[in-house]
Amino acid sequence: MKYFLILAFALSFIVPVNAQNDSKSSTTVYYLIRHAEKDRSDKSNRNPNLTETGKVRAENWSNIFKHVTFDAVYSTNYNRTMQTATPTAKAQKIEIQTYDPRSLSFEEFTEATKGKTVLVVGHSNTTPMFANAILGEQKYEFMDDNDNGRLFIVTVTENQKIDQILNIN
Image (cartoon, rainbow, N blue to C red; front, side):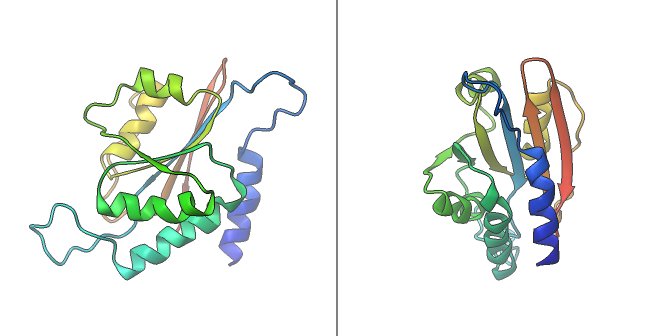
């Protein structure tokens, strides 16, 4: 519980506030996470569900994000990513939009999400690459396959892109 309060406090400084500007905000904030712990009992299963630990983590993500108002939630179309995104989407009454990282046009995606706050749930290889694409640079490597607690936050304004990583365990 202590960690959730600390994270909520930290997130309150991350979420941009545009109180002085009457026009629509041009600040876009992306929260990117990897799916929670998946069931590894059947190595041939290419679309496993979350484990019980993973389900708890998915609920914890929802608690962590309860002070963030998302305009959209995106997930790849796999059981583990959809199950990770569902508690947050349900709590915020947002329908999950699916994306295919192999065919996604980042230019179209960033244009469609401009000025919004967006959660993107992906995989150990797609989440850091998604952050790289938004940043326009190759900054992050693939995540370790056991890393289910890293949160990438990328804030894009007209003049700059700011990124940070939080480890939530």
